Image (cartoon, rainbow, N blue to C red; front, side):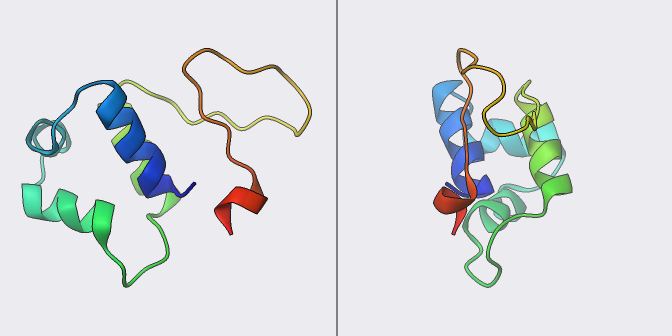
Length: 83
């Protein structure tokens, strides 16, 4: 799962439209579309992803592999999935 897919999934789960997300980020809907769909780059930068997650009241949490259980509402991503 890519960063884009994580943001899109969480937006869908929280019923946040593209227009609402663009407003929260103070960017145009076209700029948001480019962040979520730009095929010229592999994925969005981590700093951009964190900004987008904060706009929908989410955080990025990094934990050592095999540590900690699944937190309700969380999405776990491994390198095998990211390739």
